[in-house]
Image 1 (cartoon, rainbow, N blue to C red):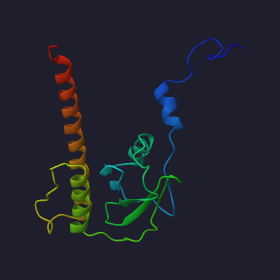
Image 2 (image 1 turned 45 degrees about the vertical axis):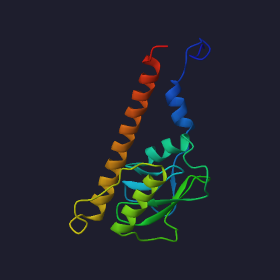
Image 3 (image 1 turned 120 degrees about the vertical axis):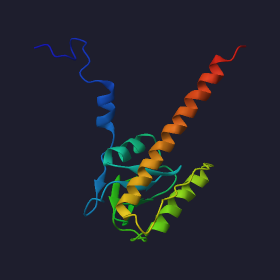
Length: 162
């Protein structure tokens, strides 16, 4: 019997194959409450699900340290170990309050040279899960702006007359 591979047909799309080769996130004891803020080598990134963290693993965003800080939407501290691809609740900083989370996020932006800062309207009236959700959305918008600026600069450099 002739198979698809024998006939020279591609059995899987390349993007599906790359997805299957990507490591899956494992959890020790239990899962964090998504969305989460996760520290990377570059800045703090928001993730609404485990697939976002898996995509970050594929881009080598976790190469400089043994473990990275994760904060879930309930303010609980977690630890991500990229070598084992596991998120664990076993960490030194277990509870995070609103000002600590905002300071952690803004200081990571400052390290990259970004002048934008997350500034909530009112800390006392904002629930912790809503604050984390707003920060994930803020970080997503920052990435969109950065991508747009990168495309704009690329277009400028190719459209200049020589």
